[in-house]
Length: 193
Image (cartoon, rainbow, N blue to C red; front, top):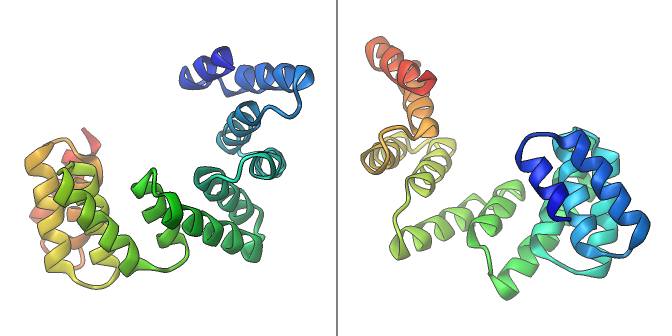
């Protein structure tokens, strides 16, 4: 399992796939291997194998992250109803145990529960400011058409981390339709650095 994880971190997803297959041959019911193999298959864009591994994983260990990634796999397969059911289960599990609030926020976004995701991001920022959460919150505000709030969040993200790529890219995307070419060009340039 550790070797497969190291191979995946190094970007050698095919080697990780072989390592996980060997581990599953020894212990086909090991939930850690099933989860790791499933997420690795997502990286390999083998959504069916990912769905198979993650379905087996959540049968053994009902888990918010497992359900979330199962939803991602089903979504990639075009199985929208199954994807929505998996995202809903991820949200339900997250509401019960809430070990990873950002994962719960991502599940809410997939379910179209933008206001619930915004609430989680605001709670996270109240506990600890991070540039990523400001950028994610900005993206949700932009999606809702609240461009001033979105811009504020992106700018705060850049105050915390001047290299925050999502914030640069998103600020450029806000400037472009407003014909603010200079800002758009500067932000796209900063994004590409």
